Length: 296
Image 1 (cartoon, one colour):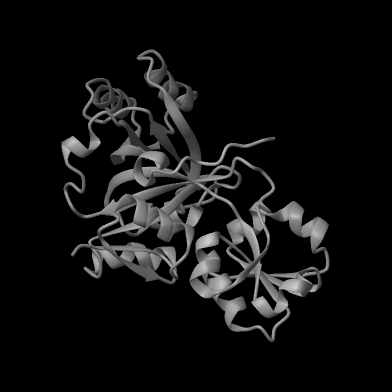
Image 2 (cartoon, rainbow, N blue to C red; image 1 turned 135 degrees about the vertical axis):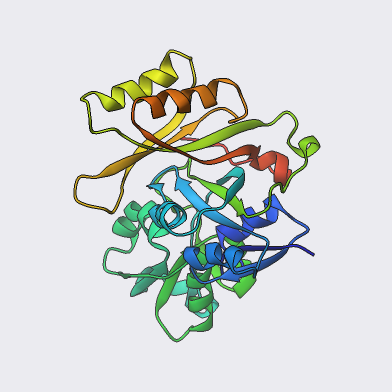
């Protein structure tokens, strides 16, 4: 049986995404995103699932930076999962949740629920842990501590925590984009990806030899009518003011137009690297569940 790693423990949003991607795989939890990525290189798992971007908080920088600077591998698939954050306590604390003194969760989850914490638990201290599931596990196992966790329904069920307030994220349309990473040449067959859209992720370093370099880069895509779904800058970590751009293109790299863009940019003196080209699955297609619709 193939093994898929994820940011654990069991019950995390990444666990749910891993199950959606490859329901027949054995899922192996890891304590951090770098550990989950390293596990592929070390042969502990065949592939791993990592969060790449959240609709509210933007890119998960630790994933992007670790992938780029330390552990390159194949991007084998994408899925965008609906995210609903809940406030959890130990069952013994459920009736007095408004008096909790400390709230545990992953930094992204805390940020997604900032207004709820500010309005409903203004005096509670915030403590960061490696995952929402770890937060749920901790509060369930420490009923003597006057604490709560921000996590999902899976984590509450997995560790016996009580959901005391549902859907506390500040914005209803909360989603996270997950990527499947592997050293395998192929995870899915052509039949399994037939009819799916594809995305290609590029890393582009601009030439410093002329002004307007970014305009030239964008123009190479624009005149070919190629749609960009995301563009952001990240520091090269070689010196202050040195940046490269991460660009997501709504197109398979095997399409004729995209290799020609890369060649044009290289001719302009840009450093162009293809980080991955991969199928984009829908949450509904993988799980059979329809994402919640915002009523706001």
